[in-house]
Image (tube, rainbow, N blue to C red; front, side):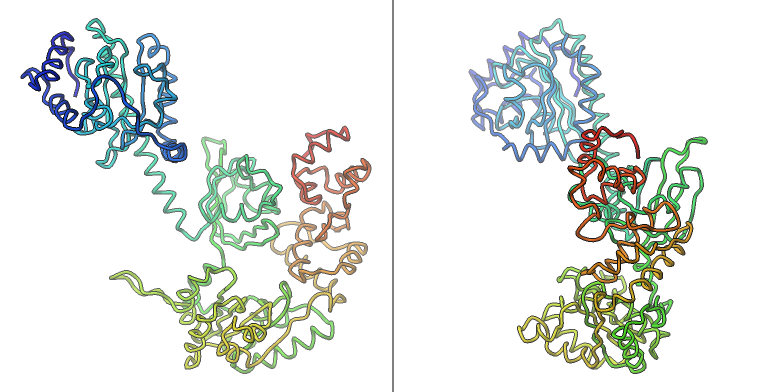
Length: 629
């Protein structure tokens, strides 16, 4: 409520009359009289401030973080009128809805420094009648002249407070105080109210916009899609939850998190995707997009389009959906087929050939099957091949990954869940797999109780064939009561073991050539092959991560190589960069490594397994130019 200037001596007389006799003069504003009476009933001292109730530093920090958008706007508002506030001896306080001071601007407040006041509570029960309490109680801006304030030490100042209201709730309070108030300060009070109402409007608009954006971001975080907005350098201007999870999972520990994430640095094959073309004004819609992030490959269907202002492309938006999610959602309707056949499994080594022969025999019948093998030996690809060669080939192939799904979510993943009232139930993957195959990866990680429940559900189920895969033989876990015995004997009606790569090293050239051919088909670039020296390097490595690890090394080599032939210097074998640690003390070795990476700092950092900051230090040490990419 905006009030006209009042005679301070009369106001002081009304205050003294109430304090001495408890009598409210009829000329006292009703809200002020009400606040005086409440202050007296609460026993609030009237002479000066008592000890404040305060937030802890942790509590204040949390509230400041929640208010960062409001504080950012109020900081800018204060900066724009700083000189005016200083000339007119005006202080500003930002309080939260509970009347705790979050931030104090300009000079000291009632002989209190800003540091003393921040975190203090200025509610009616703490300081009695004030513009803060009256504005909060009546949900409207209110001016309180000095002699009306409960604390006598404040009678030489005037104060005005406005509640910041969004969605019919008080979120914050802004208080402006004119120190040493006098009747001659009419102009200052008029200006004060104009400033206060401007601040109220600004902060309410800010909160409304922030909450709309938060609601939109919350919605985007829930969708099963990767969403990025990028600038021309590849820097991520916005990423939703799934997009952030991918990038953060792909960053090495040595990578600095002090700056925004950059796809050009984080996605190994960024330059070979359709994204950079968007900055040339070329959009693409519903095309396959393969991301290689942190050694992991993601396969999506993506749309990428430029955000243009006139002819200038300032940013690009990428929206992509994991192919696996799309297939799962559409599996029942589209009768999803396997991606690999048994004939696509590459290798001629005796152990591998024997495995393929057994897989072909097992595919012809429909009993449940267990595939055992070390990580990275191709168990999933084998499961696809068996499904495609089986009588269920026309049915869907549905995948459950026990290792990637939290234990508490696995039951509804398998059995589905009841939806809210009026909505259809959500089917589980057992139901989706009817007429086809349910592939359960890393089944050895399934809890015992859930395993018993699954076994009970599968025994009468004749329309679903289960192919399970495990890195560890569940039979050993059964003996330790760590795996369901019923489930083990159900899935182990037939067992196939995938050989490790070290037991089929003669197949490495064939496997490598097949991987490079797939990469050439996925990316619009020239076909590449390994040099004899590179093949020899791969043949002489132990490959503890098996084919999957070999694929990761070849993917990096594919994108690092500048020509059609991949050389040993293009390959970074697990457990070492190929240059060891000699480069740290030998300039020539460092230069050779740098040349092999084409002078690209990001590529060299990945090969040497160090941060870019560390590389810049060695560039300076060896007197090399650091501006080369």
